[in-house]
Amino acid sequence: MGILKKFYKKLFQVFLVTSFILSMSSLTFADSVGVKGSVTKKGTYRPPHVRTSPNKTKVDNWSTKGNANPYTGKKGTKNPYDK
Image (cartoon, rainbow, N blue to C red):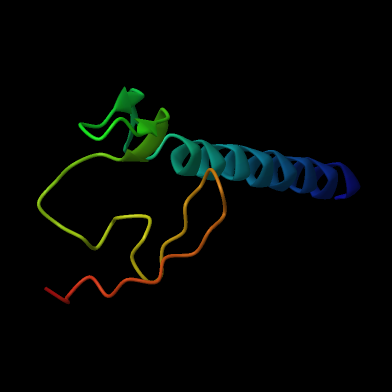
């Protein structure tokens, strides 16, 4: 009985570690795209940055309430249903 208990304990630990790694990788590599640096018409330099991938919804943007930027940790403040 002791060997079986140790086996299940180890199996549970492996499951927890695997689950943690998979959940972190999905957060880190969530839909984002790199934006190249550029100069505006007025001559202002805009440095390169990362943003959410473009789509037809505002609900999954990092700046939306309930979401957070995975690179800076800044929490979203915008209501996705405001026009």
